[in-house]
Image (cartoon, rainbow, N blue to C red; front, side):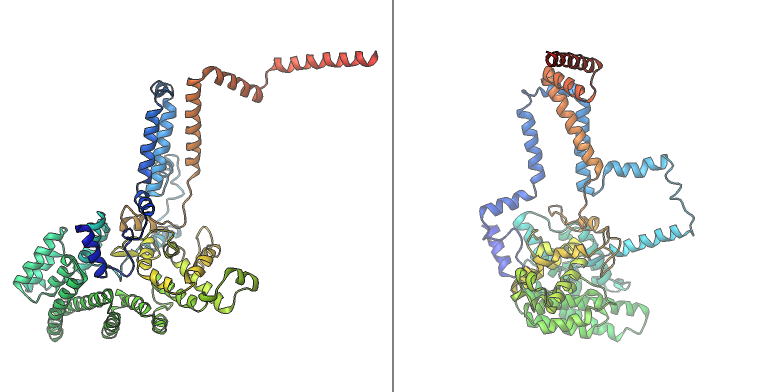
Length: 558
């Protein structure tokens, strides 16, 4: 009863615009069973295999065959380990060992050694810098509340939606945004500086209350309690309003003293970050509680008051709220400002631009009609916008078309990665569903993008080549129960196919030979007779043919 009540309360408080996956009460028992077994498929297959071996241990004489087929068993174990290592790390273990350890022993490092100033060394350094920039992790502009949303999901499902790596990045962000060198001047700020470094949530909450005992107007203490202790969006909003009152007071005091010393300037930057964070979270609370116009007003005021803070991507929050209001003209105006070649792109910008162009043609679009008469100019523009969005992030369509199940988005995302696709689809799926025919047009056209991108992804069509480091970063950001989407889809190396066929066939031949020695001996002689005919067989055949020829001649002469 407690779980059921908590779940209804989470729905009543507007935990998220999109429904939490796995918690839909309208799903039938088959869907629930399928969803429950999705994450345990490999374990069930493993248990089933062990059970089958145990049941057939007597007919197949497994204990006797172990001594005779030890090499086949070892080959099978090597194959199983290779398969597991490839699915976990995305590379072949044997191939990695060969390249890393055997190649230097065979003299393969001479060509790779280069002088510090050589062009090859410069190209390697440029490639490494590009990989680092491509794998830069960004804070999710629409990240959920830990206490009111993430923790409630854990209460209901028993699963942890956030990884340690993701929470560690958030701790670093909090120390950057909410601390500065002058914290020692105020005891409450000193306590909060230690609180943001704590790993244990109860210890952080306890430190926040200690800071409030020292200073009742400690804005960052209210922020921490709103994020982690509040169990509903209503409670979080109440605490953020208290934080806003304290934050505005401290911000005005810092403005008056900003020119006194560099320390005061650092303190003003910190207080500005705190104030912007509080107002943004208040806007998100209003959005979740259905007061969308109020949320839009807060976001617009923030963008006017603090224009340099475009790095926090408040415009993405504004885009989502305007789409909920169906104010498509305002959405187009925001895109005209931020969908610029000089500004960094995101899935929210690219797919929202595609949605607006799709909206003009999706209602009357039909694949049969388009194949007969061809595409109109508006339809071509919509298809090109979809191709542009899919090239930027190819993982999004499977979530929008519900070909993959959604999970709660992480607190940090990797642009063009699976984490960004989850964060976008979690909030924007409802906007695509609202426009009639939009998902149908997406389903008919999104796979055509891959025919335009050069393979093997050495060049991009409209963007830079797709980075190769997204899979490993997404595995760090996303929970283990989620099946990470990988692009481009990696194929099993030839060595794994060879090992699988060789070990399987060797093991089967060993078992059959031990079980049916006479039949396998006859079969082996027949195979060898076909591949390597004996001399006596050919001479006997010649004698028989000579007898037949003589008989034929005798008959013909008679």
